[in-house]
Amino acid sequence: MRRWKWDIGTKELKMYNIKLLDHSDKQSLVDFIDRCWKKNHVFVLDTEILDFQHKALFNYNFVGAFESHTGILRGILGFVSPSFYSTRVIERGDDIWLAIWKVDKTNVSKKSIGFDLLDFLKQRFQPSSISAIGINRKVAGVYRLLGYSVGELSHLYLLNPKVTISKVGCNLRQKIETLKDQSILVENNIVICQIDWTDDRIDTNKFVTKSPKKDFFAIKSRYKDHPTYKYQLYGLRRTISFESFFVAREITIKTTKILRIVDFFQDTTLKNDDWLTFANFLFKNNYEYIDIVTDPHTAKNFICAGFIENEDNQYVPHLFEPFDPARSVVLYSYFGTKNLSVFKGDSDLDRPNLARTI
Image (tube, rainbow, N blue to C red):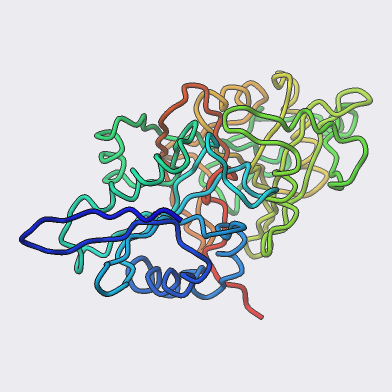
């Protein structure tokens, strides 16, 4: 394993070893997260989630800066890749999504150590793209200075036609304000079906994407094998075969259920009358609404199918662990690609924030 060293200067006489974290560095990583990032973080209280998301075959998907004369971990940069989950290896040229990026500033005098972590990552993997979801506005300014594109993800929803007052969302509105005949919901011949991951009707070619790079086996490993969340695979069938697939998970607030789409795969665009397909699905399964977080370009496809974008006074919440009823703006940054299609499940944004209770 190559170790990089940066000489901080003759006056400070300090050096840092920057490397990918080994499996033997796990406790140092957990201690750092607990001490410098967030006390009792889910990675601290439930390391199985940490391992599922970041443990590769030969290392952890974290770059770390160790103080050379003490061996103490002083900075980390976590990362994930949609293609990682099937092989447990990130290859050169993969698309990379950044996760926890933190430096112990109280004990680090070299101000650029955080950028050194990023430089190491870029040179080690030479990724096709580097992106981050859920960044704050201060960090967004840093990304802009580094030459990244920064934007706001679109948060869209479709409300169950039989719901008049939302229990979870704020002032939600219907695709059609008054649906006079709800019987049309059960007459629609376009259906959404829950599918088993081993169903032989699955066309795995529809799961192959280029930006970011994904395939069916990585998607299956990412969602089916998750240690905490129960993701379900759905297919949209217009004729005999399925023309679209999506991954979603159910969220319950008290007695109210919603469904959150975290990944979507299709080889044709959604159509104007597909809102009725989703409405029928919501009606039959008693979900208050279905929502999705995606990039503005991809969002146009869902708006065409009747989804409505969050507004300041009409919105669905984003945060559920713990539940926050306020509207959240989700910022993202990306570098190295102009055709990036973003979904919530691509990065580490859709992961538990609360440890499991046993």
